[in-house]
Length: 355
Ligand code: PMP
Image: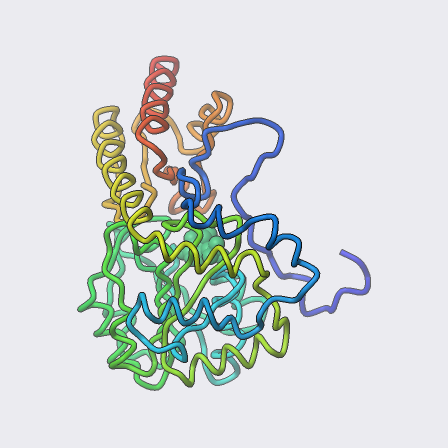
């Protein structure tokens, strides 16, 4: 830290992203990326002719992409906000919708960035403990009069709420925004985006990073009431109007032309998830019921940290969190069936070694 840093950031504890090692090839099951490459339509769209136009700025209004997303999600273009990764939308939402009078509320065990954004903006917040079975008690979120953020499915548990439960939360907090972070919704949970037509306080946030195989392109979007979208645009045009680059905009449009490809991939991941769960259970793991492209698993023969380390030594990366309440678990991204077979083989080996 330099002596020039504004004092208000001195105690800020930044987010720690999952490892992205550049030195060696791992089977990467640590940051919930898709194991499948982007569709052919994306590879074709990001061509050398387009690269040669990088001297020009991108469209700050992102019209093409918004129109296409509006078609797919059956809303109007004015109900769509697009951003440089969905982290940006979360960031802007904490910046824009919380403040002196509005505190934030989110689950104690959830995406670690919520706390970081709240701290970044000096927002007061309450983190609500999950129930013993790691589910969310929705009564904790009804009639709260706070800015509410819930990941659905939740991360790192993978457990999803039903649409009825989400609607109850949205309905009982009419004077505050309820942000539903649907980064992992395409792997078996129900999206709440249709409810944005009925409730003007619901903001549904999605990403291209998981089911649409574009984590490296950085593209996220939100669906919500026109006025909320305008608020987000206000922040974007007050910070970085060209936040989405030309190639990512093209990739984002092209990906929507291959919806079937991505749906098939999501199906394969759901199948590989079922396989992984049943094999891990045979090996003595307890696993939370996941609707995401990862599982949160606890072994009965090795600690969470040791399993993470052993797997890493053997070329497989998973995610381990040190928080007391979840330190026995590992979050394992679901890759291809072959990758998951390799994971199971490797864990079987490790189990043999620790006995
Ligand atoms: N929300 C959740 C729950 C996540 O796990 C992630 C990915 N780390 C994000 C949002 C952000 O994803 P991205 O910025 O890649 O769209």
